Image (cartoon, rainbow, N blue to C red; front, top):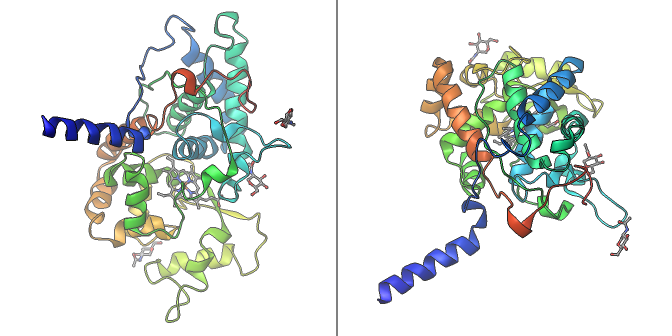
Length: 328
Ligand code: HEM
Ligand SMILES: *[C@@H]1O[C@H](CO)[C@@H](O)[C@H](O)[C@H]1NC(C)=O
Ligand SMILES: *[C@@H]1O[C@H](CO)[C@@H](O)[C@H](O)[C@H]1NC(C)=O
Ligand SMILES: CC(=O)N[C@H]1CO[C@H](CO)[C@@H](O)[C@@H]1O
């Protein structure tokens, strides 16, 4: 008896302490009766935006990651600040979230809501999840069935971002700890990091690695020397803070496993990227996905589906926003 009680107590405790791990029921065909064409409506809107600018791809993908890691995948990152409230998107860690990610979700929501049957029936959180799936495929990455049924969150504050997002200076232990807090394994973390196969970084995010690494080395010794000089040329000291460089210098517009091949050459842009190869605990995974694009794609799909389950809101913890950037 006592053992059962202790077990129940522990179970209750763990559900209270780690609510993000108790995943809500997401389903592939959630909108089949509510808004049967939702996936093609979103795909058309995202494709249109993609044809206007490639930035749609990295901007949407990163927005989804940040949304899920801060209070769960509930579109709270899209909320705009008001006179009363500084929202998540205005936390300094968001400084570089490209406006095109927000715009993609807002445009897709407008397209969905233009269909009378669908109006105010599809959450912004689900639209962001669908748009993310679509941009990965548009950039040549794998396609997958997306799980749906998330509600939109009811709060968004800049303070809620503190400590929730990984920093580019993180080592493997720090990365693993933060991803584990979201129910994601080291393998999931390595797979998701390949998102850095597309998109840009501002010079300030890696300047320490090319100018003032430590007292012995101005340049991070794990950085490829040729690549380090290229980065110094693109990012001179006191560079214009708006300058950004491709994170994958070889195939910057293709969602592929080049990310891992770059790590093997010392061409990971951030400490967090390069540490996946430097650390012997994660190197075997990097090597195997550098070698096999199909193994990488399989791992990425599994990991991004898991990412989409983090902290999902249901019942009275959420609603369906009429406009993605403001609460109803
Ligand atoms: C593993 C830990 C991670 C760290 C430390 C990290 C950090 C960063 C940093 C510092 C930037 C550059 C921002 C800028 O200067 O504009 C960036 C860009 C980006 N990150 Fe990550 N990130 C991580 C994981 C992820 C994950 C899991 C995803 C998505 C699944 C992701 C998607 C992106 C994308 C697509 C960009 C390019 C954004 C753009 O071009 O607009 N990152 N990341
Ligand atoms: C600010 O908050 C007050 C009460 O909390 C509310 O009445 C007012 O409408 C809010 N203003 C804005 C701009 O959100
Ligand atoms: C540095 O990168 C070049 C390609 O740009 C590659 O040929 C060389 O092997 C790399 N060096 C190391 C140490 O990985
Ligand atoms: C895209 C976006 O909203 N960026 C904001 C991130 O946060 C800073 C403040 O820390 C704002 O100035 C940016 O506009």
